[in-house]
Image (cartoon, rainbow, N blue to C red; front, side, top):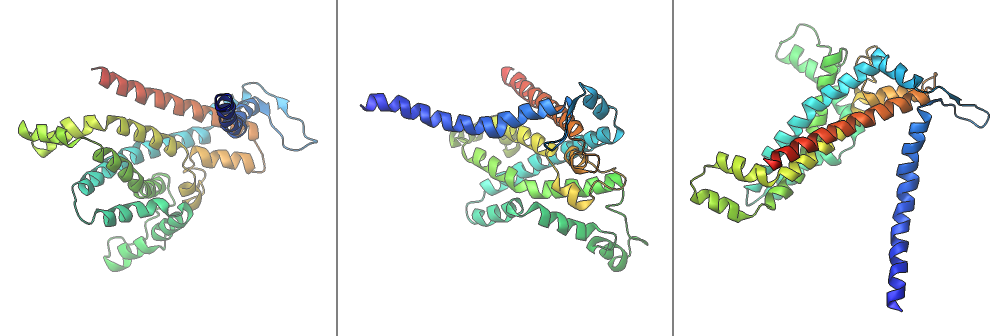
Length: 294
C-alpha cells in the first residue's frame, strides 16, 4: 500500500508547485511577450491592435528609454563592485573576530531589513537643497557659498542613489560572503601557513578560489537587482529633472500608468531588459567557467 501511495503523493507534491510557477511566473512572462506586439488596452470594451515590432522600434528610438538603460548600467557598474568589495572586506574582518561578531553582524545587516522608502526619504532629506548636508557644508564649515543641487542634476542625483544602494546592500553581501568564508576548510590555511604565505597571499590563493562560486552567485544577483532598482529613483527624484534620472523601471512605470497608457511599449521595454539581463548572466557564467577551466 505504501509503495502505491508514494508515487501519487510525489506527483501531488510536484503538481502544486508547478501550478503555482505556471500561474505566477510562466503565464505573466508569456503574456508580457504577447503584449509587446500589441497596442495593448485595458478594459472589456477596449480592442488591442496588433502592431508587430513597432513597440520595440519605439523603445530603441526613444532617447529617454536609452538614457534610462544607460543610467541603469551606470548604477550597476558602480554599485555592484562596491557592494561586493566592501561586503567581502567586512565579512573577512568579522570572520577573524572571535568575540562580539554578532554585534557587528546585526549592525551591518540592519540597513538591509529597513524599508527602502524610509531610507530613501532619509537620503532625500539629507541631500535636499535645504537639507542637512548642504546646511553643514554652507553654514557650519563654510565650504560652499550656495547649496549644492544634489538632486537637481542627472549625475549628482544618480550618485546619491548609488550611495543609497551601496549602503543598503553591503549587509546582504556581508552575510553571504561570511557564510562562504566560514565554510572554507581550516586545513587550507594551515597548509598555506606551513608554506610561508602571508595573509594577502592566503586571501588571494586560498580564500578567493574557495569562494569563487559564491562570488559568481552574488555578482549575478546584484546585476539583476540593479536592473530592478525602482524605489531610490522614484523617491529621490521621480525621474526628474526632465526624465534625466530615469532608470528602466521608473520609465516603464511612467509609460504604463501615465495618461498615454503605453502598456505595449512598457512590455517591449521589459522584454529588452530581460534579454540584457540574460546576456549579462551568460557573460558572467562564461567568464567564470573560462577561469575554472584554466
